Amino acid sequence: MKILALDSSGLVASVAVVEDDNLLGEYTVNYKKTHSQTLLPMLHEVAKMLELDLHTLDAIAAAAGPGSFTGLRIGAATVKGLGFALEKPVIPVPTVDALAYNLWGVSDVVCPLMDARRQQVYTGLYEFCEGRMQCLLPQCAAGIDEIIEKVNRLKRRVIFLGDGGNVSAPRIRERCTVPYQFAPEHMNKQRAASVAALGRLLFENGNVRTAAEFQPDYLRLSQAERERQERARETGV
Image: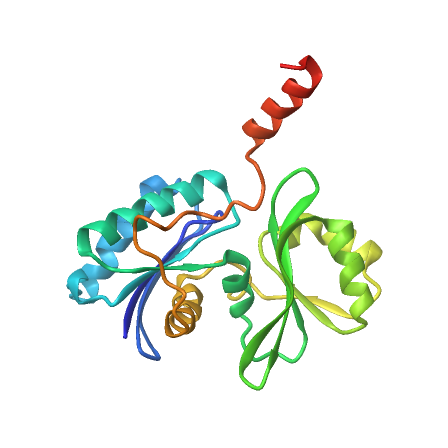
């Protein structure tokens, strides 16, 4: 089972190839460039280094959202193009689930935090039991105070990770009443390897789409759409 995985849902761009339970290669960049500049060159470089014939892939896994609207659209266009050209199925992997999967096997509650602006985060709550990730709260958009309140009600140690951790850290320190930690730098951002590993499980359970069917899951309206709706409410038009 050979899977190509891409994640462009946040600030990080990441590409990985996994064959069965073996990570063949991963290329991750988090530095001042747009995904339109990085994603395809990274894919080309990984394929070249691995001497990979893309036609030998079994499926393409993609971080399907939530996340950056622009990043998700770039990722979706790339994945759909590859899926059509190679005639391969696409595995939509929830972005927050894949981020939590970075911490596979920990005994604490895992709380990913992706910065969604306006004091909101894309988040969820997860735990690992008997080698499987269990979802305590499905991925959602929430205010930081709201998710901290849910964490407090669990009365368990929690690990925060994601780019929303730095933004939300002052609020967490002020309001979180349970023991907590922030994941270290090698675990706290999106990784295509996690998208691939979780994607393989989803594939085995039949959670696949055709390239034509695949669409990002934004979870909420874009800022432009929200502002348009606000103007419509104010003007009655």
